[in-house]
Amino acid sequence: MVVIHSEGILVWLALLVAVAAVLLFLISAILVVHSNFRLAKRIAISTLCGLVVWVVLANAISLLTPRTIVNVGETYCWDNLCLTIDGITRKVHPSETDYRLNIHIYSDANTLKINLKNIFPYLVDERGRRFPLVKGASSGPYDSLLDPGQSVNTTLTFEVAPDVRQLFLTGDVTGPTSVGGKKAPFWAPAVGWIMYGGGGFLLQKETLLRVL
Image (cartoon, rainbow, N blue to C red; front, side):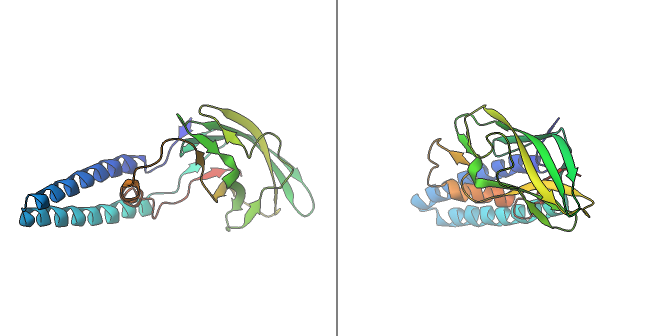
């Protein structure tokens, strides 16, 4: 079973909004060139107001949407990267519990290489306490570059407090997660803001993978 963002529909709507906004602003610019300032101003202001309404509405929906929780055995995909927790083993000690997660990572990219070196996984419990990855205890090529369509299996180890009741896998991204591909056009940041801000990502709840 593959789990996608709960706001996936908003992403596609945001893409349509971004394309429509670019076209309308382009039409407004053409009207300015032809000295039709009144109509150009009306189109530009209407488009800008529509974008504001869309961003507020989309982020309100995202804020009210329940957090997505991915269970063991389910695959979660984001940004051309798919991950599955295949199994979990625990080893109890007096002061902590070792959790070993068998992970399957797959690149769904067409041309880009996925950079895992800039993704730092950790476990978080119901109280927000973070439990970082135990360095040197993982098996398999975790922090590597994945070619398009390539997959790897690895085992991640975490030392966790013995009093946790719920436990989830997540991570921090500290740099680019892709290598190669075509250079984005100069107008890409504006369209990206419309898509991500208008797609509900400003207030999106982070997806978590359930461990306990």
